[in-house]
Image (cartoon, rainbow, N blue to C red; front, side, top):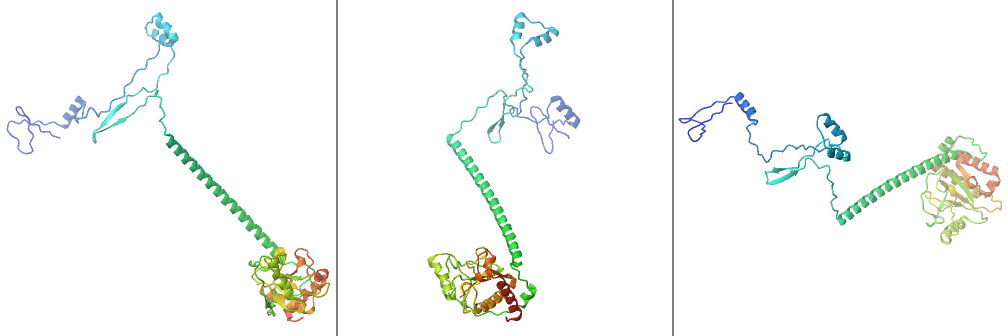
Length: 377
């Protein structure tokens, strides 16, 4: 790089174009410029002396003169007075710091006429005093912390409760599944010595029984005889007897109706067959009846009237029971071995005659099978 410097008597002049008379031209090469910079110790750039960062000042830390120190210094040829030797025994050793303290300096920031203080070395012996805390601010912080802890506790309790409910629901569904499977297995078994002569599938497929004459006289919805709850999948059909000889189907239906007023007990049935063969339907087939405590939600119940003291049905009642049972088996795709006595579920002697005379119940199931296959008995 070439620099042109003009000199004249009493003043200096720089021009872009033509140069006047009496001007002196000096050519300084790069190497000469570098040598000049090295000699002067500067790059030629003007530096603000205020903004220059001062170098940290190293201070020598005075070491008390102890016995060991005096011994080393004596080896070097230095001598000590008796008073200095006496004070050396009273001196305590001071550990020398690894790094000396640095000065705190100020750097001015002139762009916006502001000043910034930079503390590049803290005094290690300085004790920091805590800032005074406003009591209101401290109370507000404590209140916020307490509120956050309460929210976290509520969230944990909610999550724990949700997990417990999920576990309980899963256990309930698992138990219900096992119970339904067990009931389905039990429904395939025979509770007596009756042996079907035709396979179950063939009986169900051949059942074309029509609906018998039924008088629909539904009970009023109440909590004692017709709760109005939905009936699930029907697995069995139960046969009962009224336990009141000489009463008609209408009288037994009125008894169920009055239970909603008296509240004496909970009892009802879907159908009532009179001793003259009439059939009255008291409850729709999509609702439960209070007939068998353990099986109200998966069964249909038929109450039968009678005249004899031993509980034997009349021929008219027997024939109506065959027709109604065959039609219900067809509706729910069941077989004669799905018929049950109330006695088979709980041990109650109902119907009395067919509990005390097992052969009469087996004959009823055989007649029901023949009725379904041949449509006549």
